[in-house]
Structures are given as structure tokens and as C-alpha cells.
Amino acid sequence: MEWYDLLSDGYGRVLEFLERVLDGLTPEDLHWQPRPGCNSIVWLAWHLTRQQDAQIASLAGEEQLWISGKWYAKFNRPADPGDVGFGHTPEQVSAFQSPDTDTLLDYHRAVLERTQRYILTLSKTDLDRELNEPWFQPLPTVGVRLISIMNDAVVHAGQAAYVRGLRQGKGWQKY
Image (cartoon, rainbow, N blue to C red; front, side):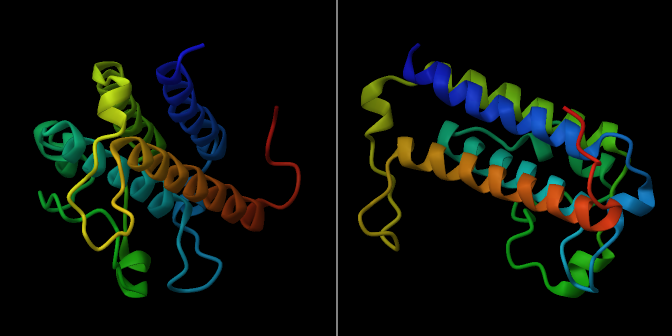
């Protein structure tokens, strides 16, 4: 197995897990918060996909699918490429509304497809390219960034599963 197969598989597993987390949820389940201001399942699923879309687009030198694919319209949100959820206040998280799970998953699938295509364009040398982000020391590389993006997605998918467990109790996850 090659390094690009590993990365592609890792990103694909986020989708597989997210599909299980979102399976069978009602709109009330999706938007439920353990407490006001806490992240809902739908916000977490949207955010993990938005951050992946924004960061992969930046690495690839492309426009975010959020804009080019008009996903912002499907989510009834502004066409703001900076709106990825970082810095959202508790009030913004509570007010977040999203379409159904199919739209959430379709957006994630589109982002995953572009991520996997991008990975296939990279060489080992590309992975070692340092990013111009002096606020990080040492400077991150493309390879480090790809792992960071995946890690963020895994963490948020896990949080969404936890919130579902709080909402529905033990036994919701079917294998």
C-alpha cells in the first residue's frame, strides 16, 4: 500500500463513520444540543466538512466547493468562504439550521472526492513543502496539514457520535 492510499482511505473512513452517525436522525435529533450553545450533530457535520473544503481548496489553489458548487445556497447560508465555523459564538451555533442529512452527506462526498483527487496529484516532495504560516513553529508541511485536516474531521465526527449517544442513549450504533 502506498502513502496516498493510506491518506485516501483515512479520509474515506470519516465519510463512512459520518453516514452511520447521521443515519435515521430526525431534524430534531440533528439540531438537538445537550445545552444551549453546545455543538449540535448537524453543526459538527457541517463544520468538519467546511473546514476540509476550505483547507484542501487552499492547498490545491482552487476555489472552495462551498462557492463553486453553490453549496452555500443549499444550506441557506451566505456565500462567505471564511464561514467554516471557527469562532462561531454559542448563539450562532444554536441558530445554525441545515437541510436534511442527504444534503450534508452529498456535500461531504463532493469534498471527499476533491480531497482524494488532490492527494493523487501529490508527490513525496510535495508532502514536504513547507507552508507559509509563520504563526506555527516549526512551519507545517503539506503532509502535516493533510493529517491535521483529517484529525479535525475525525474529532468532530466523534463528537457528533457522542452527541447522538447523549440524545438517544446506548445502542444507537449498528455495525
